[in-house]
Image (tube, one colour):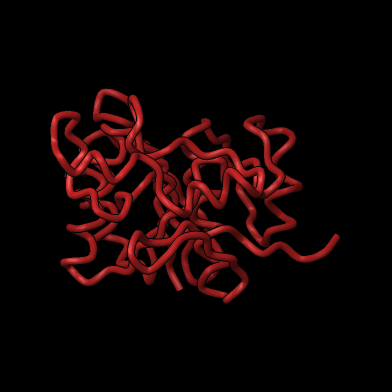
Length: 196
């Protein structure tokens, strides 16, 4: 199984992290900017699953993110986000503030990837913390090994976030996950970690 994890930036001015975990567990990471660079990297890797740590759907009844649209009356938070917040998992609602731009970009990428036949899931932006990792390379290597991943190079924050997003994809494909949300709005996937 090949899994791609994407730590999507709000816009192409900032770097998007992309991580690939291949069949043998080998990890590779890239920093990309444009949607076309992201699409090309995904197509080249031919993954079984793409995991994105950004909102890939809207609240039920919403068909856009425009402030002046009548669909706004349906709210700005999805059921999955409500459930996660209630469970103590930090998430930003998909339709508020800067999240609107990120959501718009993520939905466009998801739609394209699904049109060409890929399976796409959403994981929370707080994936790194959920897996017990920090944004410090020295402290992350042992934690990554505990999840079956060996990383030999230094990772910048976006690459680490993309890798943890891919790891949640690995848990998903191994049927070790919990989903929050509904069929109407989509689901956010969390790993079901082994008891310590």
